[in-house]
Image 1: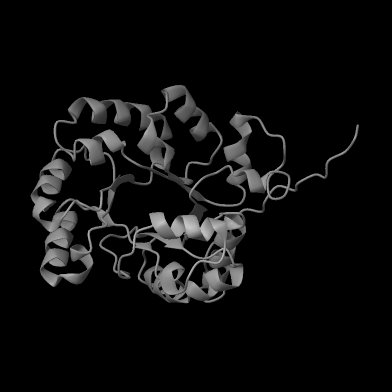
Image 2: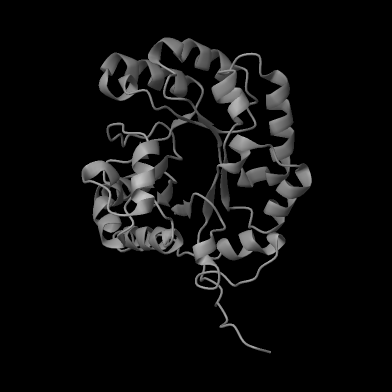
Length: 283
């Protein structure tokens, strides 16, 4: 029985020397992060497709059951909106190949303007994708959450493709006004959509945004602890990504979420122990 938890990235300036050893060469940063968490979002692939050597290094730094969620390039999802993307998709899939089983699902994040009327485009796109991968879709148009017909339409397309619907839960974040610079910045950029907590597959994926105050972040995820406990008891294998506006304590919080679930599901496999961070010396 496994619950994978992770963050939006595997390296962050505020973690250096505090959560992760510092300095670390690029070829070791992910290895150290993987002692804290067992999954990571692949946001960087949205902006640029990495070379196969870089991706092979990611694989070498992690165990086969570590979970990556590589995001399809914005050229595919946002600029061309899933049309005329064969070559870009081929390059992306070739670059991701070294991850092997670590590529838990390929993440198709669609722009907020991608509406229910566009679902047939998504259906055609999903039908053309290689069956060797799992896929997960994130939508941000409000109608998918508020219009029951649009919800059923999207769920049907995703179910036919055996793809998951990724909720990005920002309800706890938007529950009260921002109180820090990082929160004020996130306030203008993060999507505001209703809460969704239904799974379509045996491997549900959740993105949760808390606050810079850890106590408020923990308070806000109580609903997800209940949901994840239920998924585990149903035999599902979920992945939960914990975000905060500054992400300063995101790895600690991800582990705390795992602890909260494990307290209710004692048979849940423990996370690895983080590597000790040696204090800096003068010699």
